[in-house]
Image (cartoon, rainbow, N blue to C red; front, side):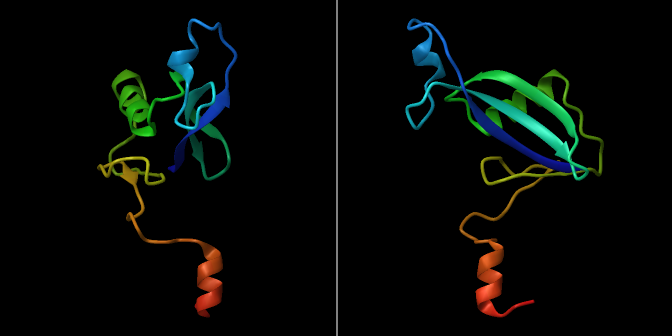
Length: 107
């Protein structure tokens, strides 16, 4: 169906709430999950998660809330997601960068 990933957006909040929005790099952010089609159209967005929230956590919350994926359809994701029946996740430890294919002479 498309691609699915989380992204961090800088957030501004009161000093009392800063601890909740601190991400793993020390910034103050909120984490958002977005699904896009291969035509570059947003199909689903959920926002407002704490900066420390993992992509997999947001995905689980979205699925329980209202993010329906039809049977037999899949989203391409990165390694931040768990393998399941609706996501295509790359193998950990395998490099998939195009530059590496070019250096190897594989076309």
